[in-house]
Image (cartoon, helix red, strand yellow):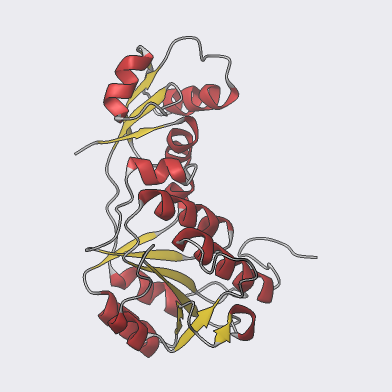
Length: 255
């Protein structure tokens, strides 16, 4: 079943990522916008002629007023399972140990999108989305990620606890974010295969998830507010991972 993506960055990045476009709708008067121009060029390259429609119609299609004058009907993404992660760990790229993000109850699409945006820019190899109690990679999440979610490999699993256990058996250090943990972010060694587990916005990690983590870490806090939301906390840790690895992202030159 086709999926509607809306917003200039999400539609452009979906096209760049190679997701199949079925239909493109654009509000009038946007032909001279640089991002819209690129979208039109990419669509025409694959044989899709844009359709002009009013902004009110786009809002109805997107179920949002934040469509920025662009919406597209795309094929839905088919997410791989744990076999993708196994292959990733076994065949990882030289110079950058596998880096995986696992979500435990992150149900806000804004948080999912924001975290995915940081993950894609900080060298994450895959994001694990449990089937239950996790926001889907919806149009709202793609919009919140500014389209970065389209470039990030996503993995669907049924049981997060079993997944974390298997990651441990594969030699991946499973690290959970827990603000009560004694070990701080900069005291962990992230220069090895790592899976970062991010908990829900209110409750954090579930008890069973904590038991599956080999290490729990906290982020040093200096203000009066003693916690960060899931997306910000996860992004802070991912930046520390990249820092310890010298920002030597796969496919880049450092120095």
